[in-house]
Amino acid sequence: MAAKFENSIVRWIDHRLPIFTFMHHELHEYPTPKNLNYWWNFGSLAGIALVIMLISGITLAMHYTPHVDHAFDSVERIMRDVNYGWLIRYIHMNGASFFFIVVYIHIFRGLYFGSYKAPRELLWMLGVVIMLLMMATAFMGYVLPWGQMSFWGATVITNLFSAIPVVGESIVTWLWGGFAVDNPTLNRFFSLHYLLPFVIIGVVVLHLVALHRFGSNNPLGVDIKSAKDQIPFHPYYTVKDAFGLGVFLIVFSAAVFFAPNFLGHPDNYIPANPLVTPEHIVPEWYFLPFYAILRSIPDKLGGVLFMFGSIAVLFILPWLDRSPVRSGQFRPMFKIFFWILVVDVVALTYFGGKPAEGWYVIGSRFATAYYFIHFLLVLPLLSIFETPRQLPKSISEPVLGGGAGLAGAATAPRENVR
Image (cartoon, rainbow, N blue to C red):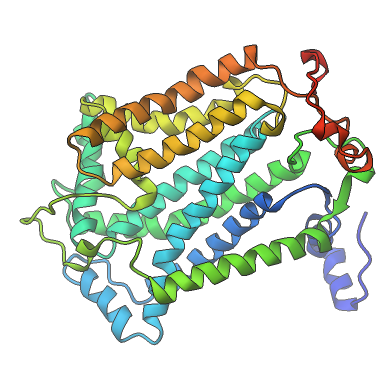
């Protein structure tokens, strides 16, 4: 049913193109679980970070020259000569890091509260696709300044595809556009770096459609039973998201204005030189866990397979964790292993930034082993042997019922825990 609008122009447009009715339903009256906490802010923050990256990236592209002889100088020109170019570049450069921070928190929130479970499997899988596209876009963007770390990072990462039997060398040649990382490579990466954000937007739209098909999950992980379990999205969650956005922008602004190069690498302020190899080639921090997995495997092909497998395992996660209980709040053993996984990923990030020698390699191997054990062994076994706590009958019960649904430690038969 179409919404009633007071403005005659809006009514005229909406009668012919019901975009305002759509926005009213999806952003205003959209029924939302009434117990969402601030961990759910990170979904909207990811969307805002994407918009920031898109606007700043388009602006930078107007001044950037994708040529190996001019790329580094054009970035310096942006920093020194373009009006507020330094600010735009620092926003874009730090925005990538904050985008990944927000998305990683969003993913771990989904892992803890079981947002990947039925009927939201496709919603989860689309989220993993978005992360993959982000990683591809970020990698290609890191090459564009054409500094030392840009050049050698591109050389090392693209060479990984040569490990693929039969077609590996051909794939590397195709990526390079020749027989070395050179001008055709830079042009291809610039084109794809500009294009992929629009592909991300398309997948984000599908992600939102899938989200609104069954509605948001909630901290209790129980299905909505009645209208009293829901509230309109506006004004309740628009205000909550606005507060989260304010905190995000304060922290983001502090990074941009006071520590813009904290998360970068100093070698990237040296022009690319194919004849001088940096002492320690490392990617950006948000790739370090996967880089640690890659280096922990002695065989090159095995390292590539494990690195991509660390993401591929997320696609099948809904079928690995068969527990009928969604939320980690009611799964005492799952909660312990979840925090072990968080520590494990932090350890992989640490090891990925260190030289591939000594105990760093040993630590990487142990952390890599646990990462896969968690998903392929621990979660399936917990689905069988873990006894969850009793769930409340509805979202409203813990409040209206005096909290008995949350406080009770009694266990429930497995057939009654949904």
